[in-house]
Structures are given as structure tokens and as C-alpha cells.
Length: 74
Ligand SMILES: [Zn+2]
Image 1 (spheres, rainbow, N blue to C red):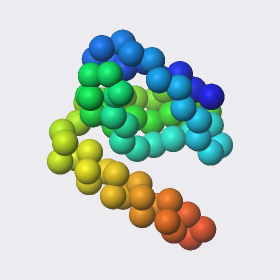
Image 2: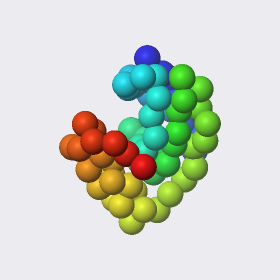
Image 3: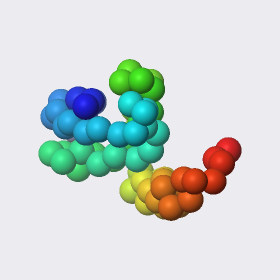
Image 4: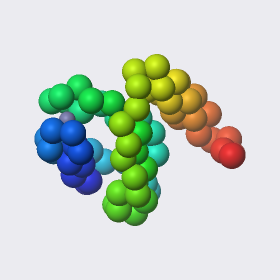
């Protein structure tokens, strides 16, 4: 379980993921801020604010990857 602190409002949200790693879009439950983030082995690599447009774009890519996760990525 990873605790992510929103860089914008400081709200904490807990979430878990496969292999303790995650890369993708995330919306803050409190300030509704949109971010792109990367976590590797429970360590936050980066978390940067993105636009609504970019968020939707990343979400689509993320959903696609999840749908075809049995196939090699990259
Ligand atoms: Zn926030």
C-alpha cells in the first residue's frame, strides 16, 4: 500500500498496485488536481501536474495497457 501526498493540497490518498510500481494519471480526491506520476518499488519517482486534456489521453493509454496487459509493452 502506497500513501501519495498531493503536491497541491497535501491530501493523502492510499492505493495499491501490481509489483509496487505504477505509472499513469491520477486525480486528487480533495482538490481535483490532475497529475501524472510514476512509482517504482513504493518510491515516488515523479508527480507532475497535467491538464484535463492530457489526463484523458493518459487514462486512455493506461486503460489500453490494462486491457492488453498479457502482451508485451514498449
Ligand atoms: Zn490535492
